Amino acid sequence: MKGYRVYYFNPANHGVDALDLACQDETTAVYKANQLGLGRPLELWERDRLIVRFPAMGSASPPP
Image (cartoon, rainbow, N blue to C red; front, side):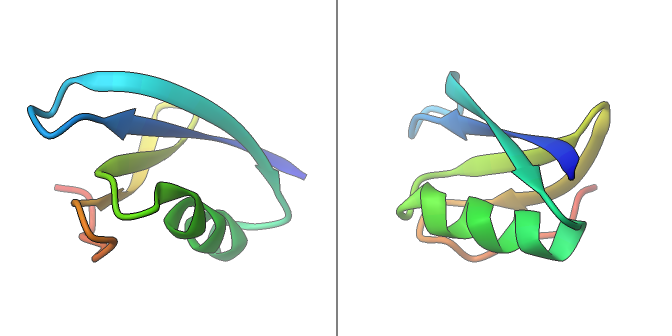
């Protein structure tokens, strides 16, 4: 299992919470993060690497 971290943001784009995820692979981590987001903006990271940013309403965007 690999370690990932989900960071949640409020509507003003301030970080408000974080959650650790242990997943088999990156694809599973992206799926779980999207499910946990419940439409809130969030980012999924593996250590110091941004994997994906989900804006509000769950549509993913690739990292910059």
